[in-house]
Image (cartoon, rainbow, N blue to C red; front, side, top):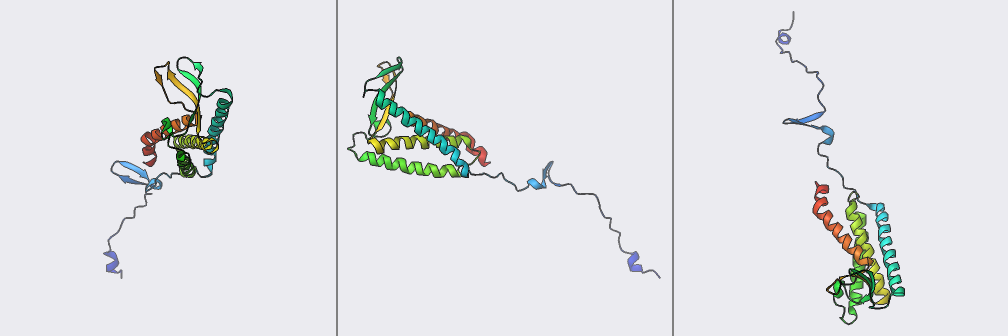
Length: 205
């Protein structure tokens, strides 16, 4: 005699339809493999060596042009290059930018040398940790590093920084005389600021 209990059991329909490999939220579909996945920021690591080479190029170019200025130019005697805008004029800076603390009495040599050394060591370490995809940032850091080392060599060897690039307009306006290291630092800082303002936020999203 059939068991009445079994006959009264409700029949449950089994859905064998394959499940989609995505999670649906509203009207959008996100593949499961992409859920909770954020892009990885990979540091330069050993690839920082490439940026160190760029810094070395800046140092070599800076020291070579300063050697030419010392051997070919006479102190404070302008040599016209593009009149009335550019001269080569050999000058010595015992201070920082714009001759800041140039007449301080000698202690500024060690102060600015120590400052440049600390900055250089920081930049060497930071280039290793900088994001690999942030090439503009790495270029800027490398240029600043090369410029800082170039001027540091001057302070340690000569007690002053050798300048020779004189931008002016006739005798009406004169920009402080500078060198290749200063150009590297200025361009490098500009690139770092551009990266901070326009690129860093995109990397962190």
